[in-house]
Image 1: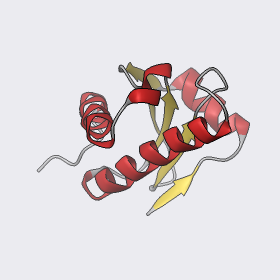
Image 2: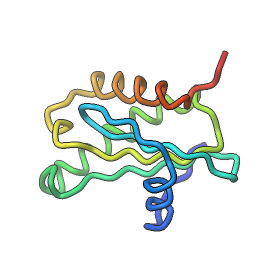
Image 3: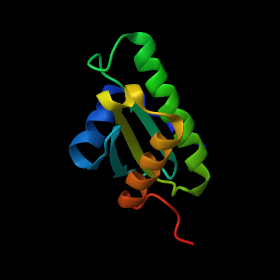
Length: 111
């Protein structure tokens, strides 16, 4: 089960104390927490576009993360920041990139 990061201080903690993994469509920030569950935050700034464009970007990221969740380790805070290139991205290329970035971060269970 995934819990959403909602408070600004939670995002700031991940930005400052976590590690970042940049990609073409998004940047993934990853930090261990002491809660034992996975917490996810998704952001898209006004630089990306109007509200409908930002909301679509967030929906694409959230759905791809939902599909990756069963294979991910618990006990981490993850913040995904959308980049401008996400506007033209399709679902599958974004999913492939998120999987690559999270794999780089070591977020998946070792089987």
